[in-house]
Amino acid sequence: MKRDFLFVLFLLLVTIAVLSPVAPLYQPIPDRDQGVYLYTGQQILDGDIPYRDVWDHKGPLIHYINALGLWITGSVWGVWFVEIIFLFLAAVSGFLAMRKVFDPAIAFSNAILWLVTLPQVIDHGSSVEEFSLPFQFAAIYFYVRSEEGIKGYWNEFMVGAMAALAFSLRPNNIGVHIAIGLVLLVITLFSPNERNHNFKRITAMAFGSAVIFGVIGVYFAAHQSLEYLFDSVFLFNYYYSRLESISWQALTKGYDRLSLLVSLGAAGLVGLITYLYEYWKRDNKEPDYKIHFAYLTLAVIPIQLYFSLMSGRKYLHYYIAWLPVLALLAGFLIFWLQRSAEKFFPGIRRNILNILLAGGLILVLCVRPVIDRMPHLTTLIRMIWSERSLPPPDYSTVEQGIYVEYILNHTQPGDYVLIWGNESIYNFLTERKSPSRFVYTYPFGVPGYVSQEMVDELLHDIIQKKPMIIDAAAKDKTIGRIDSSVWNNVPVTQGLTRFIEENYMHIDTIGPERFRIWIYKID
Image 1 (cartoon, helix red, strand yellow):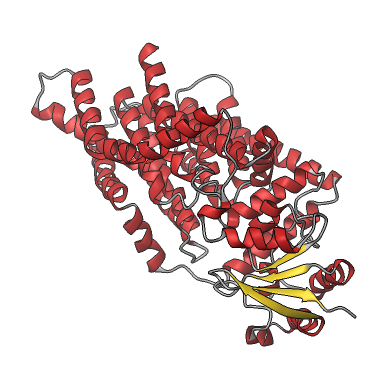
Image 2 (cartoon, rainbow, N blue to C red):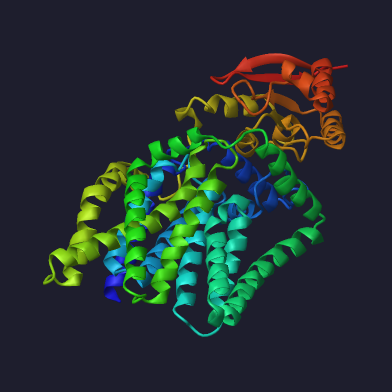
């Protein structure tokens, strides 16, 4: 028990060190996606409902996570604290799951390994992929518990609940859960003696998901937002994903960013296949839960890869979804090395061998990444301790601070600001509300999804509220500028951009990203 406590404490320290570079002190202006989540969380605290009042195409849970963080401290610091909690829970869940299959030392070194790899793909932090990690690792943990033959079906219920929560962040994040269901289904088909039991297990998983989806559905239906949710999260993403196709470049980028863990995972795959071969060769003399865990690892690889790459886009945070898969494979690599070493050194004690393997892995691969982040952590702790408070973001330290200052100096509280593009972070930072639920305008550049009703809705909001319009699309590959010729190919939206050009005037161009400022013409 004492050893486990020390393991968990060390995981917490590594988690904080890993996330220290993305603390608000070092990122005074969050990235685009984080801006949408923060603005929506801000509006939730003001009584708005996502989708009905603020448009976005991610699942609802991310917005309420941000609302919780903002409620805790009244600033982005609270969101960072919640991020630490989620990542810590992911690490602990992964450790507990691996400990049930392998040795505690192997499980601990495995958790440290994927944690210190996360910064390679963290991409500013607070992404839906990162917040999904505890639901993925927890599902693995509950699945292993269910394989141990524990009475009742609460573990299967929790697997289903974890699937629904991960889906409610981003539908693509349920590769682990689908693989669990697939393994259970295959075992059910090929093991007649287990069909009744596994049918009940699958039913419990479905019930767990249904409870979470039911609560979400009832909540949004009660607030007249369920139809908007379906439109934004499902219809938009369908048409949005068709703009790109899966490319090998996305796969190679993932390898470039996670080369060490991918290499270890590839070696782990060899170890996994060797383990299964030896299992079949020696007439199935291995506990079922270990073999089923191996099947899960084998099944999740293609599923998770496909889901992470299906959009065709190569955003760094998409590759966070690879970490649970690579963690499973790395676990089998260490396990394989352990078994091989026991054959060569039959007299060595297993616990000594495991400590040597785990300790060597941590010393060689994990210590340096943690040490490299210690200056961020020590500076952060020193500043908070000296000020006895959470320091507010200093926008002057980054070049994007000019946009915050410009909006604050050229608008008044209560004025509306419409960002053309996807930079709603400036609505959040300046507390200037968007005139429309379309806080960013990506949906107007997606053929097949954009409709005349949407255009009329935004046009009505602009006419009624006459916001300052900031065209932030100069370097945005997803949407064209207001006066771009690209709108000739989207005739529905062309009427909207033509209205802006005719009734607004371009008065300024500011900042490194060439934001163009438009104000309403005075009659």
